[in-house]
Image (cartoon, rainbow, N blue to C red; front, side):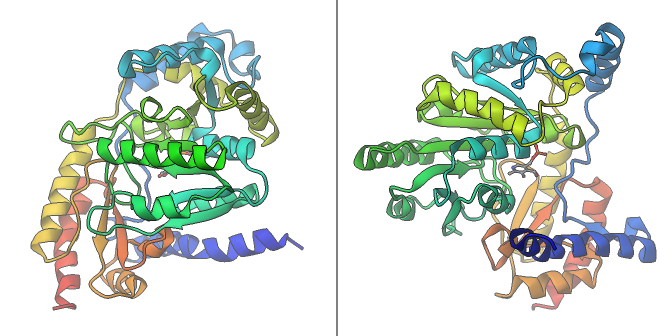
Length: 395
Ligand code: PLP
């Protein structure tokens, strides 16, 4: 008999699984080219050529016993962590060292490590809707309580009045994700400054430590030169979770890192806890080969012109058809207002045209749908007439 918690998790994840299976079924029935599957955030741009070269070089040059072994520290190779720290210092004017970096099994691994390290049962984790739905599961993994701030559907920037009102003495962490999944919005510097001021004041008022967890797998996917503020500079108690899943198109390789700055509250203990959490959560250490590979590719980036073309074409195409959405500044998602309040009904209607999109309620924001445009350009272009037929149903 499986645990009660997992019974609920299995029941809740069936919708996503059902969509995945539906995509496969439709592809078999109509041919993959006639199915417009916008449901998954799986990058469609191949990893840069330099990643392949780095893999080959590392395999040729490193001692295989070391390369395929456990790392000598659960935090990861010292030289890799040092290179990551130096690269961040050059880019953001920070002063990190290898000590502040823990290599992780992607952003998901990093978030679990930090939440495991921070949460006592009943501690509250604040998130801003719409948010990446897995935050709910990750928080629940450590018996934390997720506290949602309702969405500002005009701008999709965090609602700071509600934020201030919902911080309590039990608030242990706040998770932000910018550029954001599912809206593509980049939180402005003004928003970040105000958010930091609220958190500083609340820490003082309650005499507690409130950690800001910056979940940034989409940091490098920002368009039109928009600035994505580096949050440790605005709020001392910040932990950054980074991932190469999207920036180098390596989601299957499971590699990222956490930054725990010296300025964070109780940082020595937190770093020690994160390194133990990495071990006992079952990761032991981040994949050794991939640690070496990302060290060699720290200055590489995915080709965002590909996503940008998709973004422009889909955004303009959907606006012309009368759909409402704000133009994303980053990531590879469009968050579109459903023409009917019940967005699940809208997703079901879209499926008739072989269009697969995800209901906003999966992100704590009903009435909207997420379209992941990390697909081929042909899929975008060919889907637009189908979106046109879908729009006709609501005229
Ligand atoms: N956080 C956000 C906001 C995401 O969108 C994703 C993946 O889509 C993750 C974390 C997990 O990323 P990773 O593959 O690095 O574990």
